[in-house]
Length: 337
Image 1 (cartoon, one colour):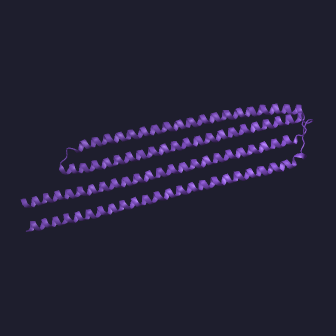
Image 2 (spheres, rainbow, N blue to C red):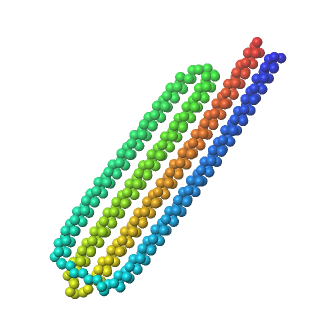
Image 3 (cartoon, rainbow, N blue to C red):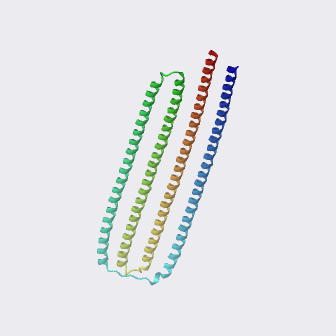
């Protein structure tokens, strides 16, 4: 009777432990579901911010186009005003002095143009060298991570071979330990992929910044070239005006010169607007890449939590199995007595 009483007591404890395990498992599944809902909420919030930023960019571009149109209207108004003042302007310059000044100024502008071209080439070469160095550092870091991964794999194999020779209970514990090491191995692999994606994103951002900077330098080079052509045309116009003083009025030629200068300013403003729009698009693209990176990080955390939950459930099942084996052993011992 005492043996039956004791056996019933052990069976009751076994049943209570099984109920507690089910309760704990349901609680962990509920937490897992809650984390998934929070991740979806966070992703929707990031997408909404992305959409708002896109709308702000469109609004800003429309404002710049409106300012461009207003400047064009002001230019037309100014040209009409200059036509009314045309009859009052006059200019007389000495031809020999202007010719000498023109030659001197053209030589100075050619020298500055050449110097700016050499500085641009030097800067581009420096940026290419930095890009190459960053690529080499990334390769070195990836090789180091692969070496650590291989070393961890060898240590795991060595540890597994050492644990194979233990008894049945130790064999169950070994399986539990191997599952834990596999989880760590998988987590390290996911972290390495996450880190590699982050480095590739930085590499891509650096490349986009280099292209942006190169476009800006080319725009400055183009503007300087347009200013040089404008100045040369102005000097040639003065030369032509001095030779034609006795034949026709110079006011019409001066008005054309002023109109060309205003058109050049209009063209420069248009180029600056395109440059600004490209910069805003680059920022938009960078924000989108950061959002993808953040989403991947959240998915990795979700996956890790799921693997930890499975590990915990396996541990509880192992404890349950060990308790069952101990109960059978204890029952057999009591029967033997």
